[in-house]
Image 1 (cartoon, rainbow, N blue to C red):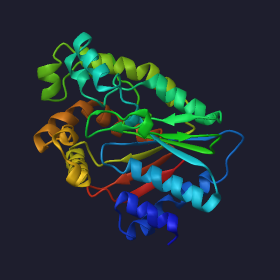
Image 2 (cartoon, helix red, strand yellow):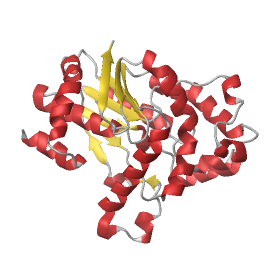
Image 3 (cartoon, rainbow, N blue to C red):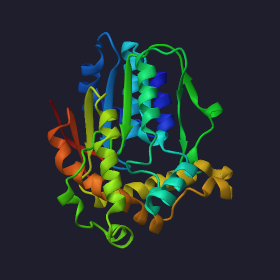
Image 4 (cartoon, rainbow, N blue to C red):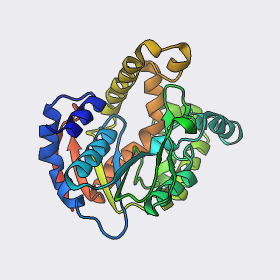
Length: 294
């Protein structure tokens, strides 16, 4: 095991056995991406909450750098959320559900596109935004990383990266109690769908390839998300003041929260496997059971 691999395991709190599994399933990706052209390659990773998107992004960047001396930057759609104040303003002027981060309309898409463009163009100073989920707000710029110069690969991961909008007919029927009780007039889901069909597609158009981590079903997402919150609570540890814990959710809050994601997640689970360049099918324990490459 190399020092870089050990640091990767430590960062992600993973056992050594992860490296064996990753080598088995992801070595075709490393071989595929080891040769870059005359411009940076932009790789999208899609997967529901808790599916392992950020871990895969970190693994790819770590190994591509370690083995092939490629300069790789990992970006998360989550880090481009609008500020808490901006979402509160959307909630007041468009629909109350837009106060909750996550769905299209709650990200700063121009900032995401600007960041990718600056990285692709080798800007002398590119700020990499970060979002503090424990506070439900963007981190101060002084605490964020800055990248100088050209990169070879940009990995961009997110739960709705590469997602496609739905038709008006698909939007008509409520999928869960959240939509039925808080979006009976369909303003929220229509606003989200319009954003997804507009500026989000412009953002996804910059992707050269799309990797999908396909969950077995939306029902598995709750357990995965609960695990994420428990890890966040444990990571904060002694720092867990009331301010730090304000954004960490209970099980009932998670159930309500992921209902915001159900429509796009289920739609993507149904249609994205046919489009993804690299498809990894997961079981309920997030273990890969099958893969295909185009």
